[in-house]
Image 1 (tube, rainbow, N blue to C red):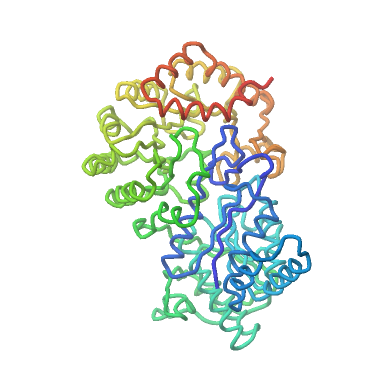
Image 2 (cartoon, rainbow, N blue to C red; image 1 turned 90 degrees about the horizontal axis):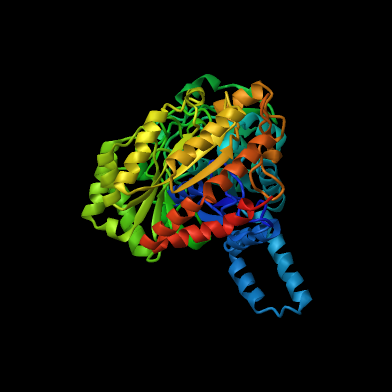
Length: 587
């Protein structure tokens, strides 16, 4: 069997929908994030010996039918040994020979019922209904397949998701690298037992083993009784070693002993305890190696980075408690787990050797700079290996995590730009959202970045608890005072699973469904309406703030001067501006 990792199509007619963004949308700047979570899980599955296929539909702006066709081409290459022959014949079929083409399509469809596959579908809040519809198509086309959802949305709403979309087999919640490989092992055993002993026996084993697997929510498709517990000698999931190629890590829940002998009815939804977070991140293969083999890096664009760029994680989790931040609350938790400095720099070296035209590396950790000693160790290794001469890099960096000396070392090591979440010009609002920073720290941080020669892309957000028209103006005033190289202004978009969502939902500030999280064209929509501040007012403020910020004569001259000193940065700015101008100048 295969594991097919899919980033499904959505809003392809308007642009590239970026699910992996902390706020998924078709970005006004043209940004498309790499689907890193999906990439890491797929890379780990390959490492375990599974045969993996990967489709990132938004990267190629594929529609539903084009995506299904691509999947068919990927999956049917092994069915009964026929597909390579069938596909080679298709290449020789005259486009005008309709009968021959129909015969080809009939053979393809006839093989679908034989496909044994685990589909892993990336999802997001605004696209969840479309993602589910795509999953339904897969189940209809490949009736023997299993379809599992992953991502922030189903991790936060597993009961709701499985109730609403009854054709989905289950959800691998939160961090799912190991979980997916374990599910695949169980599915592989299901297929083997089904061939040898029939479907009934295979389903008994399937649900018995799923009942002990941490980190999943799933639906019982028939009535079964959990009959046994794996012994210590059977710590690897049964079925994973059937062909001698691979074995996956044990993720069974010891507490599930209490469930032994329990009966479950068909249609019942089961939520197993969360999986343990991965502690040794060096064990996960490098994202860049998988990107090299399966994706086209030129499809991806990050407006703050020089193009082309590659994104990586050097750690997961964030110890900070910002109430709006999605990933720590829904995916990777609040403990910052780290790749070793050597492992990180080895990936820089790999990218240097295998992507000769990549200009910048984007470190996607929520807060790369939490551990200053580790940052310094990485910087020293980058300098020692001369990777600082080969690459520029940027990272997310909180305003209370860096001093001037560390910034200077980062600059020497190739760091070009920092991205802090400044959020608000009002201390009370920063306290309300549990930001853990002060305006004094903000000002000192920006002063130090200028002394160190680091560029800054500042993030501002309106609509949080305590926001008024007056506090929004204070935020703009602060942004103009700080005068960072670039800045973004957005209304708060509260996502399920976050404290901000619970606050907004409990108080009746969100009155829209998930599909309204994006506009028709896939761009962000403000779903929030506060008692004294409407969503329309927040959107207008952000639109006006961008104009006031970017159309200042002094700012334009500053950017031109920066561009003269660094032509690559000027190119990057012009590329981003080309994408952004239609929104900047709209009436």
